[in-house]
Length: 400
Image (cartoon, rainbow, N blue to C red):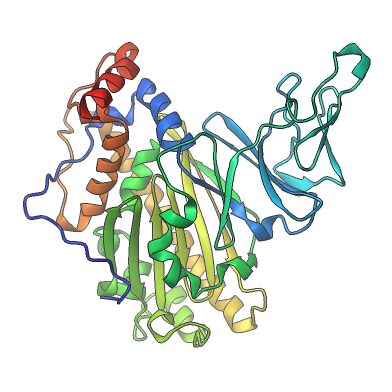
């Protein structure tokens, strides 16, 4: 194993069951997840290179919240709720764009400075005097780490992003991700599954040999997973110079230049860093990407992500990045189908629960993280939907 591997051992007597099926189709549980799993944990919004110039902004609508991330006139990256303090309209309507020196609400024309303070209301004499700070845009917790912009909608249990990600800082720092630039726009797509089914598939590599022929061809037995520890996990593989049964893999290995900007141990590595509860930062010698998922309902999830390249990318790196993207594209389509098949069973009376391999310990530890936040998930049968929040509070009090 790679020298980066943390000292993680799997107990012989670990519980091989996962979450009960009811956790995948409970509306009341989903409302608790939105607050305690998503709003209270750090989320990747974008990369600093997505908003390179003053006035650039992107928006992000997830779990009932509307985020606005922009670069102000001094070059500082800021995060706000995309909510006008007058009537709650969106301050900006587009997914991305540029404002010259102010944000103007499209509903009534309230104007905000790029630092979030209120510049003025339309027809100000129709209001009492308005404090520019008090009626400014509502700020979000925001932290930049390795070039990625993280936001948080509500205070939560995680430390700062830098503290949280410290175990991976040395290795990921070799890639100089803060200097990369977008290879494409941020993408989104929807999938007809519960968000946890997406994580369940992504948190284990046991299925790679059977379900992902391109990945198996690329790196085969070199792939291994580490379980979630303190909100982080890691998967590591190196590609096989003799691989090439598939066109994209054969040409990737043939074209990919020697990654001399990286230490020897990383020059053929594909690494996935999992961040609780729902995000991954993945690196190859040519690029870095993030991807994540957010629930739209118990049976629908939005997938979101983006890819970043070296600023001085040469033709070989560009071709290798394209081929790596083809491999990823096929893998994602295969994973979406796996999540659908798995998720369908959660409402079946014939489904008796997970029985996990040692190679799926990452699934179990992710479920353990969820249970620690929402202990109601420990119940084998679903409580009354109307009692879900109260039951969770009582169980949390009993274990604190």
